[in-house]
Image (cartoon, rainbow, N blue to C red; front, side, top):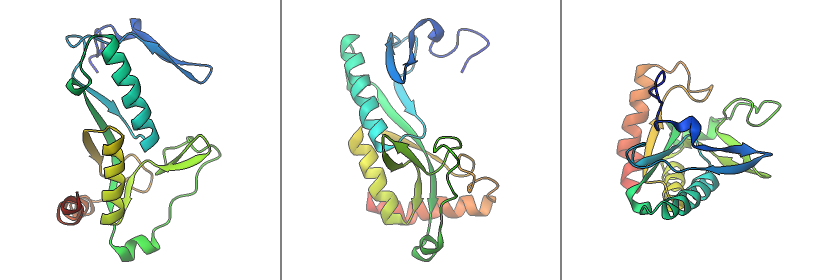
Length: 173
C-alpha cells in the first residue's frame, strides 16, 4: 500500500464497500488507472474464490470492463508432505472461534473448507485445480509464516517444500 498518501487504489477509502450486518456492501470499482489489473484474495477457501470471481465479473461488466482483463490471485500456505509425513500430520486445535487465528481450515457457513495447500502432492494438486476452476488465475505460495505450524521454519525446510512442489506437484497440474 502507498500509505501515507492516497493508498492503493488511489482514494480507496472514498470508494465505499465493506460489510454491513454480515453482508457485503458493494463499493465503486476502481478504474484501471486507479488500481492494478489483479484482484488478490488471501487465503481464500474455494467457495470464496468462486463468489468473489462472480462479484468481480459483475462489477467489471457494470464498469464497462472485460473480466478477462483482471487476474484473480490467491495466497495460500504451502507445505508438501511425503505420504509418511502426511499420515503423522495433525492440524493444530482450532481456537474458540474458527477465525480467531488463521488455521489451515475455516468454517464457510457450516462447512469446514481447506484454506491451505498442506498435504501430499496429489492432495495439493487437487486443491489447486479446484481453486483454478473457481476462478483463480495466479497463486502466491506462503512457505513460512501465515500458519502457526509454518512459523520458524528453517531455510532448508522452505527449500525442501519448493523442491517437492517443483518435482512432485507441478507435473500433476
